[in-house]
Length: 363
Ligand SMILES: Cc1cc2nc3c(=O)[nH]c(=O)nc-3n(C[C@H](O)[C@H](O)[C@H](O)COP(=O)(O)OP(=O)(O)OC[C@H]3O[C@@H](n4cnc5c(N)ncnc54)[C@H](O)[C@@H]3O)c2cc1C
Ligand code: FES
Image (cartoon, rainbow, N blue to C red):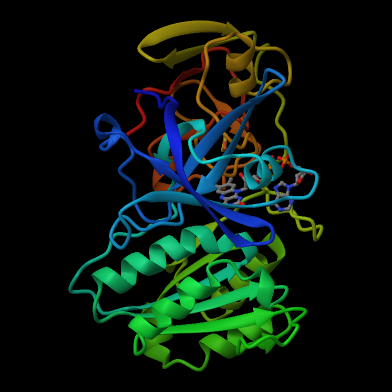
């Protein structure tokens, strides 16, 4: 079935830095299975401001293996609607609409595994990485973890103390490299500057060739940083299947354009209707020229699932059963999902009049 929101109580709030806060949720016994998650997945939170539905994706920062609670960490975006609200107004005891965990930025672990995991995080991009990193350390007792973590200065490092604790606990298996663009020299060993291609190559090339080839690489941070890292990894001939990426936004402030805009094709015929299967019902909905399938569903009042609306998360994923669509952005889908016929309805335009999408055929 398509995914729906559930009401969860905020059980704890911890200030991580001046502009980042961790929110924990209480999961009632009847929702324990619904909120089971994999390290690296995200939740969608929904708020109503002046009656307007505002929903945002937040990566789970806890690990299903290392932690016994569920939490997300939200960094305030200046001028934003939701993140400033969460950082300054949300209180313990408040009830929040939360969608169950989703997302592909994860990896299956093997307790007999003996691998190297190299994580690159920038700012709030640490959240899913912190979840995966803890799971690896607690599950694969012979695997090694290297975290390269970029921030502007020592005081903006989210999970700074938790990382120190982890380092003490896993002294032989965890290496944390802090990369600070504007350090204030307050007691954290670091390298000054940004993570760019050369810096990434410099770090990875310190490892043996066989380790480089077989390591798993994870990255989450600003688009510009991720582009530089990916370019370094591809130059090292790392297999794409070992490179895992998560983007919080498709257009970052540095002017980089992560979103893949395909050349827009004219519809093959005049498209006026699409068929949508949702919550066990079939709906024939009108589609206005230029609207995505998701927008048409929202306008028709059928309440399709969505979160980011920019092709970054995959909450709006549905299976294309018939017809042809074109996606403006598809980075949030894995190759396997695309092969199975999944589309992101928030970026999909119908090209033919016989399009049928099924939100229920989702798991
Ligand atoms: C899969 C996924 C996981 C995410 N996980 C996290 C997480 O763990 N922690 C977290 O803090 N955020 C996370 N985000 C980002 C989050 O969903 C929101 O986009 C973010 O909190 C901004 O929302 P807002 O309502 O405050 O700003 P909005 O009102 O949506 O935007 C205000 C302005 O800020 C710009 N903007 C939006 N997001 C960013 C950003 N991240 N950096 C710079 N400018 C931005 C917008 O383009 C807009 O101009 C995640 C996003 C996705 C898709
Ligand atoms: S709603 Fe996030 S990808 Fe469509």
